[in-house]
Image 1 (cartoon, rainbow, N blue to C red):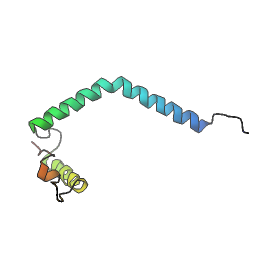
Image 2 (tube, rainbow, N blue to C red; image 1 turned 180 degrees about the vertical axis):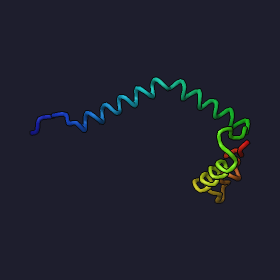
Image 3 (cartoon, helix red, strand yellow; image 1 turned 180 degrees about the horizontal axis):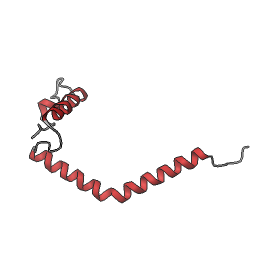
Image 4 (cartoon, helix red, strand yellow; image 1 turned 30 degrees about the vertical axis):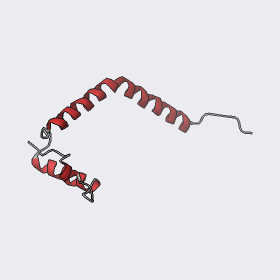
Length: 85
């Protein structure tokens, strides 16, 4: 039987997981606040403030490729990607 030795790879994987988990825990309230703000903006159908019209159109086209219209509405039909300001 081999002795159970920790490798550098195991150390890096464990350290990375702990660091990522710690960072997520520390930023949880900020992430929650951003999510709530995004929901409020979505419900109010506010336009994008950080994208110009061309970028917003590109984002809408990409989203339409991910969720296309079939027998159910696609992104454009559902109005899930707001237009730019």
